[in-house]
Length: 177
Image (tube, rainbow, N blue to C red; front, top):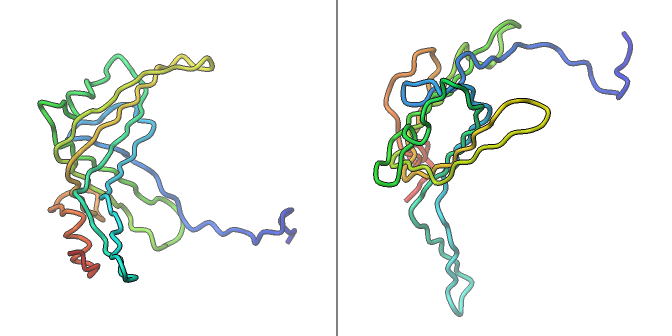
């Protein structure tokens, strides 16, 4: 068999992953989502003790950010109302799923989902843009939220309870506290 021109070992097809329905927000599909991300963090600061080499970690409350980029269409929902306003915060539920298709048996499950509940969510910015090479108008939305609760599901129906990041870490033996 001929060698790869760059000297790589020949790859073996082991299966495919597809994003069947992709992304669902609070039981409503947000149309034409092109990108999304969720970050959740706590502010951790070192405190040093004078006269020793001791260091202590001081943590404050956690908070998160959500960003969504989508193409605007005639049927686009009011994303600001869906994700929450300052005097009317929301708790969007994001269900992102993938499933495998084709190939041989592998370590991937037949379907998996991550379920994210973003409590106390408010939109902090919104913007629109376009480019010369296409006729699309894009909408970029950023939101902040107070608490992230999440869960995983390995079947096609997303059910079950969610948990806080702290509870999940404690259940895994991470020793938060």
